[in-house]
Image 1 (cartoon, one colour):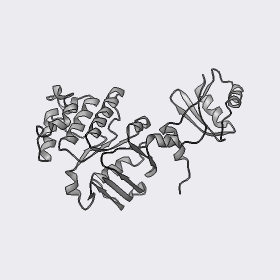
Image 2 (tube, rainbow, N blue to C red):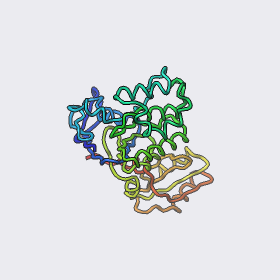
Image 3 (cartoon, rainbow, N blue to C red):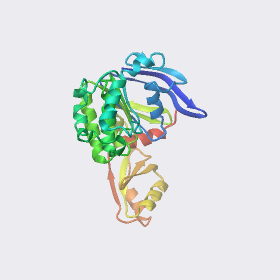
Length: 303
């Protein structure tokens, strides 16, 4: 469905993408996971024909993103990271407009967006600019789907919305995937990676790894401990000064500590922390998450 080969893009002296290449199958829910500035939006804008790459090439649904851009646009649905609908038009007017752009009608494709649009249809006369974050999200998705695209691109669709709306949105994507739609989504939230069939971890314009979420987690081969103490910042400092520390990062209420040795000595670590005037110390082994794997890959030397 999508093939990308040695794709690179510069903006002045900034290299946004560096020799990116991957393949996506039809019907996949594929995620690009990485922090702000990693290159996700640049890649998406190239794939939806809004930017031209400096080098390399890409095809989507068999069409070249540069040579065949006019034909390709009719096959794509695109939801950019920033809300880009017309704020002064109503919900219904926005949807009608986007349907007309692609030569169709809301009625002709209502079955495709029914489950999503019904949640905001009671507010169809409200201006789009006056909607809540979650409702804007549902309207933007409806507009991206109204012409029955072959591939749907969603650039950080859940950024800035509440946890409930995030969960509902991913449930909607799973239903669309079951209907056969190919979906490509980017996100800065590592916990959303588990919703995808495969994910690409991206940092500074480079793809660090492409695999299933479970495979990425399983490849983490260092001892990992979750550590907590009453004094959080002194704990982080103490762990980073420990002679056997490989990596130390704050994760929620815990600090994730990775040992440089094949096996971590929990008792020795606890004894060391006891000497650092820390109290209420808790240490427990944990399995690696996508975020742990991402942090480890970031520090591997590039080839």
